Image (cartoon, rainbow, N blue to C red; front, side):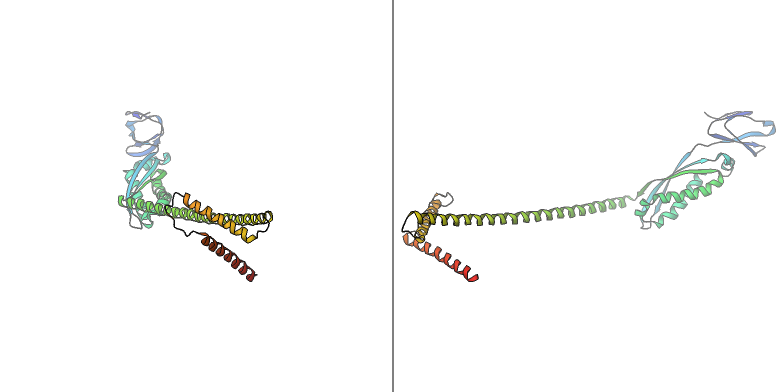
Length: 291
C-alpha cells in the first residue's frame, strides 16, 4: 500500500514512518496509518522513510599484499531504525554515498595486508570488519546494518590465467607421479611373474630329467633280468643307439630344418656313448670327492 497525503491528512503505509514538523522544526514521528495535520498551526508532514531492508552493492578495486589487483563486490543490507528515524532523515543527505565511503575505507585498509590466497580464505573476516565499522558509524545516524556479504573476488584476467595454469601443472605433476607408481608396480609384478615362471620351468625340467633317469634305470634292470648274459653297459649302449636314431628321425621330420649335416656311423655312435659314460663317471667321482 502506498502513501497518500493532502494538506490536512496523510495515510502512511505499512513498513514506512513519517516525519512531522511544526513551523520547520521536528515535532514527532508518525507511525503507519491515517494522520491529521493542522496547517494553520504550522504542522505538516516533512517526509516519509521506508523501514524495509535495502541493499547496496559496492564494487571496490584494490591491491593485495602480493601486488595483485582485485575487484571486490560487497553487498550491504541496511534499514532505518524506527526509533531513530528522525536522525536518519535529518543527519544524512545521501546515506548510500556515506555507506559506500566507509566500505571503501575499511576494505582498502585491510586487503593490502593480505595475500591473494588469504583473501579468498578469509573473505568472511573482511566482511566482518566492514560490518563492525559500519554498525559503529551508521548507528549514530539512525541506520542499522543487517548483513554484509563479500559476494565476489575477481583478480586481474592475467592473474586468473596464471592461477589456472599453475593448477593445471600441479595436477599434471600429480598424474605423472601416479602413473610412475603404477608402472613401477606393473614392472615389479612382471618381474615376479617371470621369476616364478622360470622357477616353475626349472622345477619341470628337473622333474622331467628325474623321470627320464628313473625310466632308464627301470628299463635297464628289466632288460638285464629278462635277457640273461647281458650287462647294464650293453643295455645302456642299446638304449643310447635307439635314442640317437630317434633324434635323427625327429630332425628329418621337422619342417623348420632344410639341411642338417651331422656325423653318422657306428664309430660315431660308440664315441657318443663313451662321452656320455665318461661324463657320468666324472660326475659320480666328483660327487664322491665332495662327500
